[in-house]
Image 1 (spheres, helix red, strand yellow):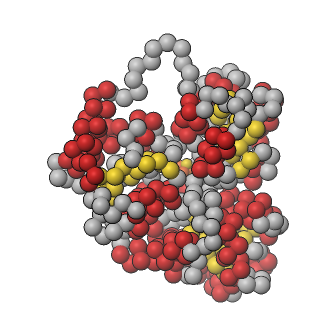
Image 2 (tube, helix red, strand yellow; image 1 turned 120 degrees about the vertical axis):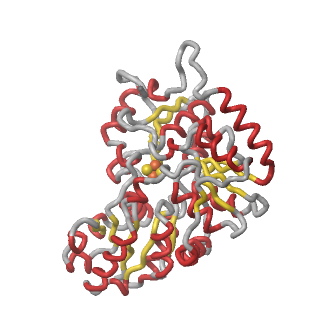
Image 3 (cartoon, helix red, strand yellow; image 1 turned 30 degrees about the horizontal axis):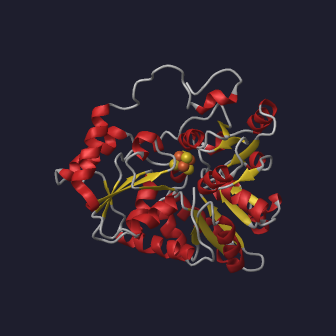
Length: 382
Ligand code: SF4
């Protein structure tokens, strides 16, 4: 249970009167410590902001997916990079690290429902249909970091770029410029980030956006709609951020006078339009850290991070924005038992769950990632 009744503060989950048992077997904590110590500098553990506390405790560095991939690339001496995050992140780390390094994902079931909403066959088919409609040669693909290596490679092959939630505006401006007058962007796989960036950050019109449904012929669009559109948004979304609602924003404002609402740009457009601030996880963390004591924040992003912020900044009132949103179930696949298993296996000389991207896919994904790195003022994401 995340909370009950109408008191938003109960959703924080950081206070519980009485003595709760430890969240994990204390034996596992000691085993994780021992394994990490035995491996020393040969292992580097990365922890995404959405990971559980019990896992974050063993991370050498925490951050968003792009920051973590760059951190991994900056540690060429680490033989093994244990990525406590989801599959597409481990793939990006594999692409950006040296061939001599191995990236390990402690649980292969840690995928991302958003990334899974754009399969490479569907995207190739979409491109063929854009060719048929006569618009492919004026369309530049942009894929969000939260996509498979195969989608990043598709983007690289077609002269596009990867973007993060921090640099989406820069990436989109670059892509529209590259597409030229009357040109278009095919934005994958998160329709909300694409729409929010185009309308909020670039000042484009909502009417310029169409949604490509991969389950319908021609994406469910007519050739005229495709010709008239500037943004072709893939019909994908985050199953966590897509659940925050307008009603939740209104309820928070009613329940907590003076509360400021901050959400991630993966939230739906109508929600983002209502909030006080919008930003990547890194921006959310920085904003709350820099806020004056005594301020109240209703935060619309993954619950593990919101709980951690509430605990880290007790001088603020930090509440979770929405009662009907759960932890990211795939992020939560990585737990202490899986981390201990991955680390102890390395101690025993066995690499479990290595993530190895096909060399050709890795080459073209790297082209798209390098294009992103070449964008002005590149920072970080998700
Ligand atoms: S929070 Fe959303 S985008 Fe992030 S890993 Fe989970 S499903 Fe994917």
